[in-house]
Image 1 (cartoon, helix red, strand yellow):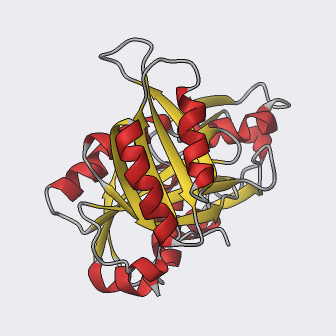
Image 2: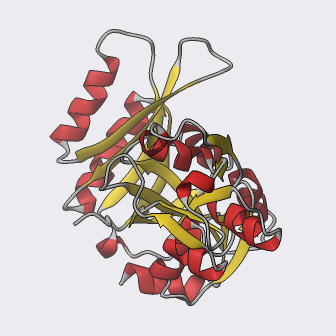
Length: 283
């Protein structure tokens, strides 16, 4: 039911990348294709569109099962006071694609998003002749190869990208680990539309004094309040050396337990903030 509330409120979303990108796949799957796209070449630009009210929400990758958290995106969410209103886990299958009629021995360069290159670097070890080049977006590279008829150049991307831009897939599922999943969050400027009965997950942020046991004490509070910690990520505070902000995800069976934990943490921790309350997608 929580997605129904979002569908009624969200008509246009900003994504990092273009049609054929993995963010596009999330938009298509999460909203059943019933949403307009604002294509952006960076997460910063996507957030700018949201803050300028050029779209209703942003879809943003936040962590990957192979390479871990996308730290700058945590900072973006915090800095712009954004609210997580939903999440989606996408099975990421990376494919090597190029203009028709070529084999992998014909490829001299592979361009792709840095995260995609990290997830696939083991595949290229037997091909030392191939240069790996970081680029802005997986699908945009595929589009460019087709638009400029670039021989000897390949992209890493989704099956949808190969279909949209009429490229041949030279190798399927080239990521290092076959089960490669990325968690995406749906972000808005505000969060009012999800009823409490649908909420069983929250993302929180807080800071702590640099004292022995301070983090353990907070974690014990969460446990005592029957919250299940599913994620913890620290982020250094640039203006205060050796002090960290903590971003955590928790799940719970009762919203009342969450309310109790929030009231205690608001007293114990510094700069306590709720980044989002939403439906757990991993059930």
